[in-house]
Length: 554
Figure 1 (cartoon, rainbow, N blue to C red):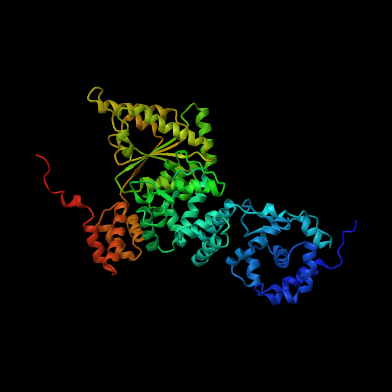
Figure 2 (cartoon, one colour):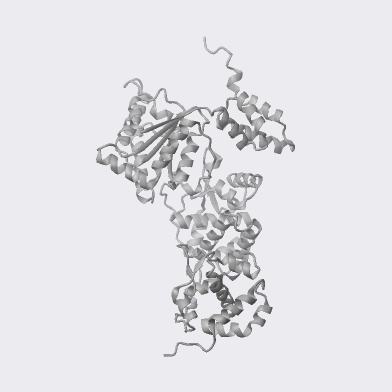
C-alpha cells in the first residue's frame, strides 16, 4: 500500500510556522499560507485552525516548549489559550499530541509521539481513528475540572485576576445549555459568588461527599488579591450576607474561630445536581468536618528559639513518609510502641497549634482535630465511649488516607493533669475514666498524635511517659521578637522593631493582636498610625500587668 504523500509535509509545516509569528491567528495568515494549510489539513484530517496550531506545536516541541511559548509565537496572551481549547483538545484526541504529565486536562505542556515524528519526517501518511463527536461531549465534571485547572493557574499568578474573572463569566455564558449555568444566570450571582459556588461543588466532587469540604478563608483569599477585599468578603460569607446564603445555595459551619469556618452545598443544590446534572453527591458524614486538609492550610512564617527549632526540625524529618515507616519498622522489631506522639507545651500565644498546622502542611499530612476544651462537657455520663470513638474514627480515617494523618488534641490541659483520688466526686471519677481510656489508647497507638497545652507542671507521670517528644515553647527571644514585629507590621523600621521587642515581652499571639488592632484602627480613623500609637496599643495589651500589684484574696 502506498504510504507516501504528494507534497513535502515538513516544508508545509515550516512555512506555516514562519508566517504565524505575531500573526495573532488573524485572517491574513490563512490567506498567505492558504495552499500549505489546505494540503496539511487534508493530510492531518483537521480544520484550518487545528492545522495551524499543530504546525506550530510541532516545530516548537523541538525547543522543549509549552503552549505558552506557542501562543507567545502567535503574539497572543497565555489566557487566549482558552479560546482555542477545543481545537487543542482535538489534537490530543487524534493522538497528534500527548500529555506530558498525569494531569489529563493540563494543556500548558505537551509531547509528540515518535510515531508522529517518524511519519512526518518520512513524508508518510498518519494512521489514526477519528473520534466520534458524541464521545467529546462534556458534562459538568469536565467543565469543573477545567475550572479547577484555571483556578490553579490563577493561584500561581499565571493569569491575571481580570482574565480569570473573564474566564468564569465566559464559562457560564457560553454553556447555558447546562442546567447549573442557567441557574447561576437566574440567581444573578456576582463573579466572586459564582467562583465560590463552583469551587464548593468541585470540592464535593473531589472529596466524594458534601461534608463541609470548602474552607471559607482560604477560598476567599485565593480569589481576592487585596487583603482588605478578602477580609470584607470573608465576613460577608460567614455572616450569611451573600446571595449564596440568602438563596439557600450553601451552608456555613459553626466554629469558635472565624478562620476555621467551612462551607457545604445546601440540600436544595444537591437535589438540583442529582435531578438535572445526573450528579450524585453523598450527604453522609465521613468525619471530614474534623479533617483539616494539608493543601488548605495557609503557609505561615514562624520564628522559633534555638531549642524549639531543633526539636521541631527533628520531628519534621521523621514525618517524611519514608523515614516515618522506617522508624515504625525499627520500633516494631524492638517490641516498642510505634506511634509518633508529641506534646507541645508552654505559655499561650507562642505558636503551638500553628506549629502543628505548619508541620502538617510541609509533610503533606491531613489533620484530624479534636478540641478537648469544646468536647469535655459532652463526656460526662458517656465519657469512655466518646473518647474511644475519637480513636476509632481516627483509625478509620487513617485507612482511607494516602499518608498517615495527624491526630491533634488541641488545648489538652483538661486531660493530661494529675489524676484525682477516686470517690471525691462523680466529676473527678469521670475525668479519671477519660484519662484511663486515653492512656490505654496511646499505649497501642500506631499513628501520629500531637497534643498542645499551656500547662505541663501538673502533667500526670503516666502521660509524660507516653509522649515521645516534649517540646517546650518559651517566649520569643529578643532577636525573634524583633523579627516577628517586622513580619506582623512591615511599616516598622528595624530600630522600631527592636524597641518594641525590648520594651514589651510579648508572645507571637499578642503581637498578632497588636497588628490586628493597628489594621482596624487605621480603617476606622482613616489615617496612618504613628509609632507612638503602636506603643500605646502595646501598653494596653496586657491587662494583667495593670493589676499585678493589687492584693488578691485575704
